[in-house]
Image 1: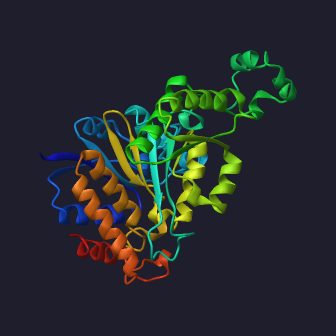
Image 2: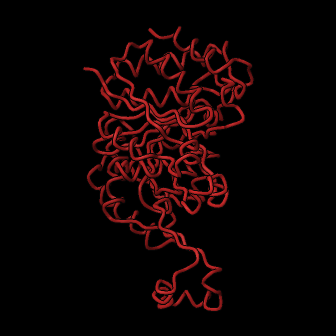
Length: 369
C-alpha cells in the first residue's frame, strides 16, 4: 500500500534533518506519498498562527506525520515578532496543540546506547520513557493575572492564606490537571510495551509525598494496572531520586512512565546518557494517529549548514516504520545506524568529528542491507 505521510520540516535545522530522513526512506524504498504542511515560526510571524487550520485539515487525511523541529519563544518575545495588525494574539506550541487535537497521549522516547558512540555514559543503557502527553502542566490551562472569581474559590483552601496579601495581578497560576483515564492509559501503554518486548520492570516516576492529589492518582492507577501484569515488577520512585539513580545506575531501568513535565525532564536526562539530543528520538502516539519527531530544537544558528546529527531524526523515522508495521525496514534502518556508529568513521560535530548531516546520512545508507 502507499502510505500518506504528512511532511512537516518546521524551522531551522528541522529542514536539514528532514532532508536526511527523506534520503533514508527513499533508500529503503518505502511506498509513500509525502504531503507537505505549513507549520512553525514563519507562519506565526505572517499569520499569527504557527499551526494553520489548513495544515490540521491536511493531517486528518494522512496516516501519520514526520516533524522536524520548531522555534518557540516566551509569550512577550513571541508577540514582539508579530506585525501590528496581529498584535494581541497568543503563541501556543504547535507540537503541544497537535498532541491535544489528535489525542496523542503517549510520548514514547527510547534511549539506547549504541557501542562506539564516544558520548555514551555506558554501553548497556536501554530504557524507554513513556510520558503522558496531553494533560498535566503542559495542558496550557494558565492564568495571569489571577481572575477574581477563581481567586475567591481558591481562597476557600486553607493553604491559600499564604497568598492573601498578594495582589491578583502579581499571581500567575499554571494548573496541573490529571484525570484517572489519562493516568490509566499511559500506564497501560508502558506495561503493554514492557510485556510485548520482554522487559522485566516498569518504574513509575512521580512525587506523591508532596504533590499528593495528582501524583497520588497516577500511583493509584499504576498499582491497579500492574495487577494485570504480575510477571512484571513495578517500581515506584520519586522524580528527584529518579534523576539521581539514572545518573548512578541507568542500566537498572527498562521502562519508565510518568506525567507530562516530569517526563520531559527525565527523558532529556536519559537522552544525555546515550549521547545527547542528537540521538533522542520520540513518537507522539494515539490510538489512531501518530507524529514522530526528534526531541532537539530548531537551532536557528545552524540552519542550512547541515551540521547537526541526523540520528535522532532517523531513529524517529524508524519508530514511524515500526508503527506502520514495516518491521523489516525498521530493523534494517536501526542496524545501519548501529553499524555506522560502531565503525566510527563518520562523526558529526557533537561526536567530536567534522562530518556533515548528509555525510552521516550517506554512511547510514551504505550500511543498509
